[in-house]
Length: 375
Image 1 (tube, rainbow, N blue to C red):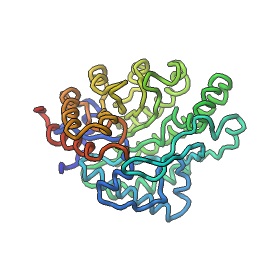
Image 2: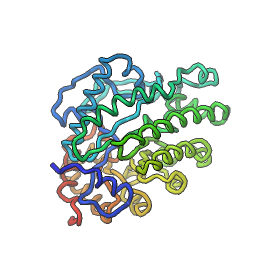
Image 3: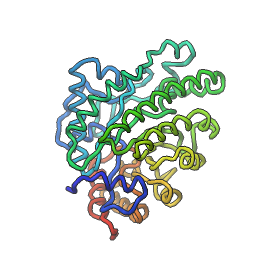
Image 4: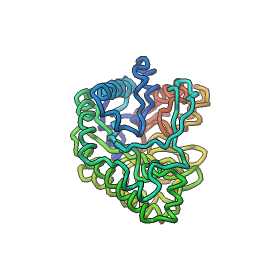
């Protein structure tokens, strides 16, 4: 097991010289995967890490469950050779517009939820006024105990990567529902503007709060902005509503000399110049070989931003272990020379990927990821 050292990841994020070896990066890992890796039984059927986080802080018992989850997270990331532990700033945004079905993954959580595209918690200006928006003090009070717990239990060499609870566009679309959101985009721009202002201010506060903390080494925002074929909206709508708030978050992080990571699914080719020049992110995460492959993005943008992850989720789920090992070698050969690259999944360590393939990916990274590269 290699010794954790956040400096190697920091060098990658800031496009400095090659580190001693290729660092690993994931936005998050599903708790079922973490439990399996650290040998922990399913310790809490009651705890679901989703967007309705407000209820987690309603009692001491819930806080203890969160601490147990964080303790397993620390063990997981340390055991596998990561240089950090991710920690999400709680949003406290309550929503019930989600659908549920049986989770058929091998490491099943029982039920899986996803966004109800046709129904929102906020679909009108009246809904906006009546919604129980959290105040900033509540967010801070919820985050600080979690931060202190992770800080006090971090192994030597590791730091925290703080993360927003979803992104600017994501939270607006989650609260409104996809169809009501696009309807309002054309019929009620006042509501759309107010939604982005409210969500943008909350996430800006999250970025400021977390980046001020001493053991936070970097900040990440997950904000899916597109389909496999292109962005959700015309570029001018991103420039009008989304990018200004994302940029404010980036500026808050940069004020403290820390790097900003953007995770965003979708083929964003026509937005990349805005993302790099206007937002001024330091690193991009989330890639998919069938639409926006990591090797292609490394060639196009690797001299301007760090490229993270990219081991295709479909291949991690369906390839044989022999096939995945050869594929990971190819990605390392193409993306790692010169630095500016961290190895990891194309999206997240989801509970449906083959566990043996995920571990094989990391094994190849350890074996062939030492600089100077010989692969």
